[in-house]
Length: 58
Image (cartoon, rainbow, N blue to C red; front, side, top):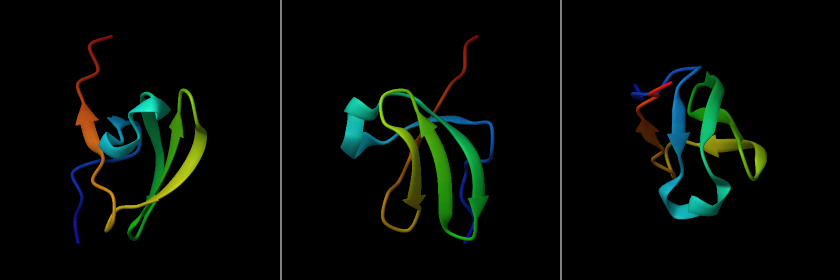
């Protein structure tokens, strides 16, 4: 399965908006490690959670 995010992308978890913006650190199989502003590092199962990629305007 191919996901449309890659390391370095900025994402949000729509079901956990309080986590803030996260930056994808790595993706191994279906698990993405994302470092969120307000929640720290989380390992996300991409089969269960669809992260939304956000445009990085900086």
